[in-house]
Length: 85
Image (cartoon, rainbow, N blue to C red; front, side, top):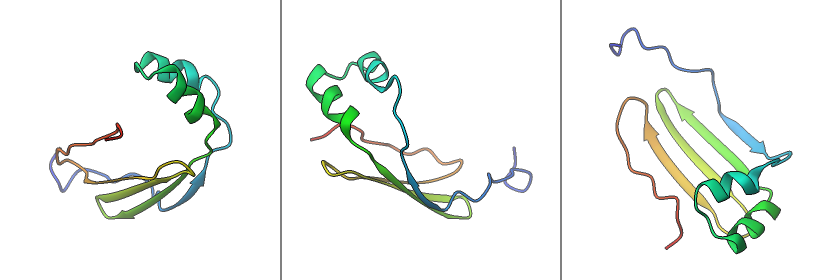
């Protein structure tokens, strides 16, 4: 689609708190995440903060263990690092 005809999604700005994480352990196992990390991660209750400015997005995931941030522009390739260092 051309830039003129591409429609942006609904406004996603806001702060989002997880309510439940059913089957999250199985999801992490399928991703190849080790047992100990799965157990710790399944106990976390992350908060997601989304800031949207047109077609630019900034995501923050906030937990008591580790925070994570990601920014991108719709339609542009970007790299995302999801594993700890």
